[in-house]
Amino acid sequence: MLFLVEKLLWLLVTPSTVLLALAVIGLVLHILRRRTAALVCLFISIGALTLIAALPIGAAMLAPLENRFPMVETLPANVTGIIVLGGATSPGMTAARGMPTLNADAERMTTLAALARHYPDARLAFTGGNGTLIHGAMTEADVAREIFTELGVDQNRITYEDRSRTTYENVLDLKALLNPQPGQSWLLVTSAWHMPRAVGLFRKAGWPVLPYPVGYKTAPGLVLNEIHDGFPARLAMVDQATHEWIGLAAYWMLGHSSAIFPAPESP
View (cartoon, rainbow, N blue to C red):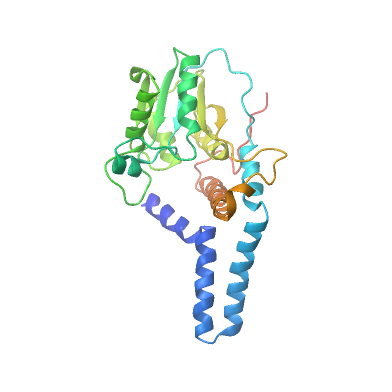
């Protein structure tokens, strides 16, 4: 039930959906001759969309998330295992086209293949079911299995968790499968913008991890780095950043995260 409520609420508060709804309401009010109310709705909608088109608002919202945990410059000598969170595959498209399909967060998958070679004795784990409201039988883990096989990763090393639908479920279900022990070191691979929320969940679950952020969408000194992608990409970035900030607050209020905005631990 919580999963269903979460998905439905997000559909209602997505910035692109809200701004479109305001525009439609404004047009309806104009037809009904409620001119003042119509102008207010249209002004807010068109004004916000114009600002998103003209300014790097999405990048400004996403950058603090991506910069919260630093890039890994020196890998530890040894690790117990490497965890990759789902979110980089498209089960629906994979099933429809008959070939494994990745999305814009593909670095999560390629990074595991690279780290698996660097740590030949480390345990490997992928967690991801199907987080869409309407879906078929294929899960993210199914797609991951095909991709890692094509990348030459030894399947005997990988544990797949295929029931979770949210990041919160990723952590709990994978912990139940792997049963991590005190003193072990686990690398956590996920997109940089997603790392704060993920780390907060792992810490709350009593499973310390070493963050390995990948798949950056912003960069210091490149404030306007998404200009060339056009308005749709800018609006999508605002949606993504808003989703992540709301997710951080919601998980903290529900008691699922260790902090509202998890940070690196002090040396």
